[in-house]
Length: 76
Figure 1: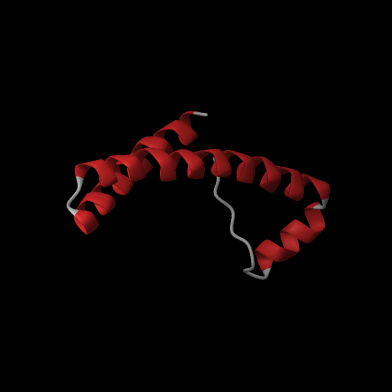
Figure 2 (figure 1 turned 135 degrees about the vertical axis):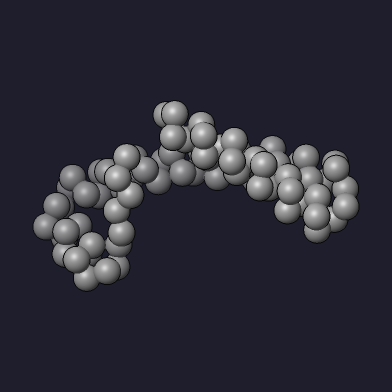
């Protein structure tokens, strides 16, 4: 969960900066910094759970996909 939290902080910062630079509005930058990364953080959490379930459900298929270059693994 610490990895997810640190990712969220980084994402909030990037979202605010991009929103502010594109619009010049602190309000838009702030809204983007809260809404978009919050959604992505939740999605990322469930993506990690699904990824783990996929790799455990069929280890051979998972290994073949990684070996073929279709998937890549991030070690925790």
